[in-house]
Image 1 (cartoon, helix red, strand yellow):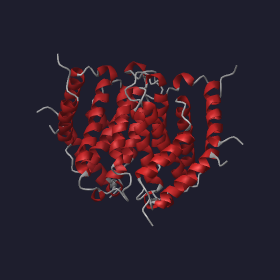
Image 2 (cartoon, helix red, strand yellow):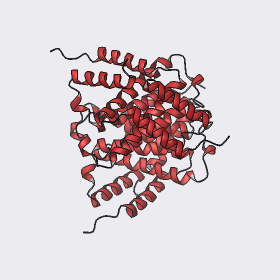
Image 3 (spheres, one colour):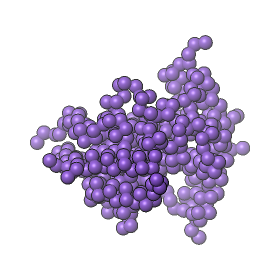
Image 4 (cartoon, rainbow over the protein chains, first blue to last red):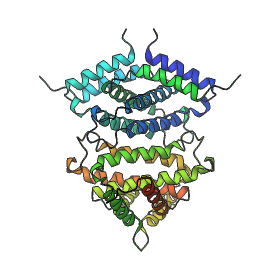
Length: 106
Length: 106
Length: 106
Length: 106
């Protein structure tokens, strides 16, 4: 089975190509679109007292699901335009974070 | 081999647990942190004339790589807190987008 | 005549008080709402080739006007909650920026 | 005395002109820069339990002050590029909000 991030990269490539949207998809424009989707996600949480999952209304889960998907799809496209392997980049960042924030000793 | 998104979910869970950070990781706080990382990504592009990849300075690629990783890591953690399967959500969103934006006829 | 920023501070105070919204208006929530409004502004520009004003469609001006207003209104409210004089803060920041970025010599 | 928003518009115009920065200051680029500054503001609040002002650390107030100033300065510049009178736009938006969210009857 194809890996999920590779699968989404291939699907977003085909989707944009079929619609001749590549001309709009500069990394800058995709980064701006990404920030718009992240704000649509944040909007669901903005007035919650603490933001725990239990404070969300019943019907919000599906909408949030779609926003999370939009964020991922733009992220995959930016990474693709810049030839970044997202999984490898994330593994490297986790290593750097582990050095920056060492776990407390037992 | 473990799927990339599942792998990152497991690694971020372990990372947060080892540092007792789960108390801060409400979906709301993670969404806010996600928006901060997206802005750090956008910062690299803000003054570019059109935003094509070729306009970036040589040294920016590595920094952008780290920002993309940060965005992905927070996204994975929000999805995990809300029990969302990111790959499945993205596949569903692609289907909905294909209906909303049908490809032009050949 | 009342100064514009002072006028808006007074009006947003009265507006929130009349609706008993102060309970939601923590600086954090207002900052999150601000970021949402900024994204709604950015959305108008995300696919423009360079982003010059002339690339905007005719009907977008009114919508952009409203988004700019929303951004200002939330900004005024955050500053109010934190007892910040926005005009004084901006004057100070301009001074700091002038030191950080000295103008080129003639 | 000059009105605060008019004063800041004049000062930001002079500042950009003295540095020949107008070439970078398309509304799109300024909107992107605005979103970056808003995220730098949001960063101070992201891990707070509820986000009330009292949860901020002592030293954060000055930094937040500068971020609020940055947000205002970019906002003023976008409005200027698009010939928007920010105060008038905000007054109009307050009127529209009052219709959309009528106050509860006493």
